[in-house]
Length: 188
Image (cartoon, rainbow, N blue to C red; front, side, top):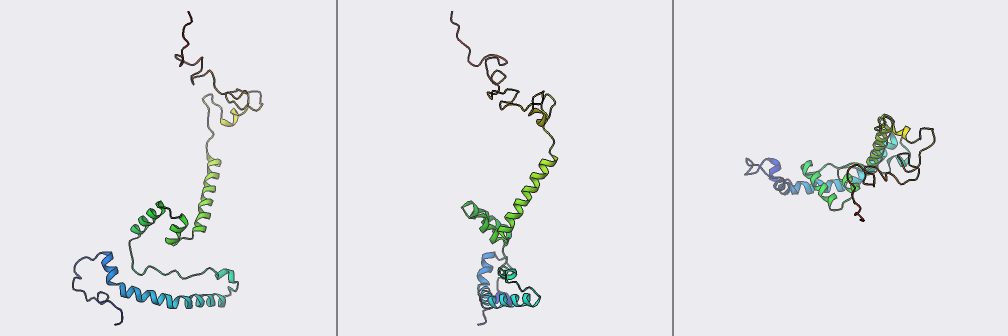
């Protein structure tokens, strides 16, 4: 009659046994439904009341409170772990990161901006504190970009201005260490 289930008042014949989440959700369904109806009925009034309180406190610019909404807590507490697993599966099936973050209660736009800031700071730290790469001849990578006479090195690397790279070194050229990869047949 008042939509309060007997379990909420402690009147349940199997109360000594453990109840699953689904069983509790079914038993508390009338109370959850009543709570949802109250949220729908009073939600708009509370939004307006919050705006009027902000105006009374001196926040007269509508931009400051334009996007404010009431975020109701879950009516029936669940497992955060299971919820996050479900959201990961949803994302694997194609749900956007924006949707997943929204469902978890985060502001996706703000989280993206924070993530970009963190990545920028990390890159700056890496550039500032990363040690120079030392080549086998003992010079740093910055010193290798110039020839010994101070001129910029050509595009080929290894002091090779032609850009052909290492044609006779250990990568299999004609003068490579060990046997040749394609031995030439004897013409005699």
